[in-house]
Amino acid sequence: MAGDVNFKFAVLGSASTSEESLEGRKAYAVGVLVASLNGVLLTGGCPGLPHAAAQGARSVGGPTIAISPATNREEHRLVYTYPLDSEVILYTGMGTKGRNVILVRSADACVFIGGGMGTLNEFTIAFDDLDSCCAIGVLLNSGGYSGEFLRLAGLVDRSPRAALIAESDPRKLVEALFKHLEKS
Image 1 (tube, one colour):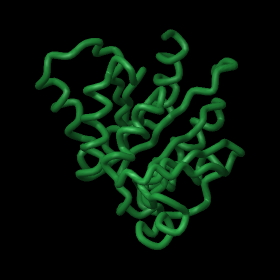
Image 2 (cartoon, one colour):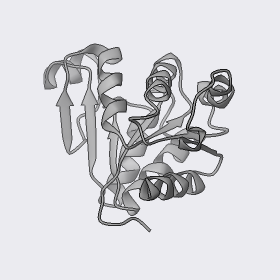
Image 3 (cartoon, one colour):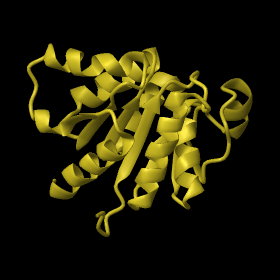
C-alpha cells in the first residue's frame, strides 16, 4: 500500500496508561501497522501509550524517533523518567508543551489514542494546524479524552474535514490515514 515515501506518524496518548492495558495493546498494534507500511513512528519519548506504539513499531523493525521535552539524555532519563530505547531521541529542552508543538508539526499524521490533558494539548495544536498537519486520526473507544475529540472538532467551523479520520479498529485507522496521505 505505502509507496516510496516514509510518512511520519506521531502517536499521541496518555503517558500514564499502562502499556499492558487494552489501550496499550491497541497502541502497540498501531505501531506495528505504521512500521509494516514503511512509516516512521514519532512519539514524545514518554512511557505509556506512545511507548507501547514505539515498541510495536520496533517489533517489526520500524524506526522510532522520540521528541523529548528534556535538554539532554540525563534530564530525559532522571527528571522526566522517560525511556531511552528509541533509535533517535531529539532533545528540545522546551518542556512538554514546547515539545508538543515540535512533535505535532513534524508529523504527516497524528494518531490519538486515549489521553489526558497533554493529549488534549496535542490535539488542539494538530487541529489548529490542520492545513500543515496532513491528517488527524482518532482511535475511538480507546479511553481518555480521545472520545471527545470529534465532538470538540464539531464545535468549530473548520475545513477540510476530510483530514479528520476516526475509527475504532487500529488497522482501519492506520490504513485510512495512509490512503489519505498518499492522495495528498
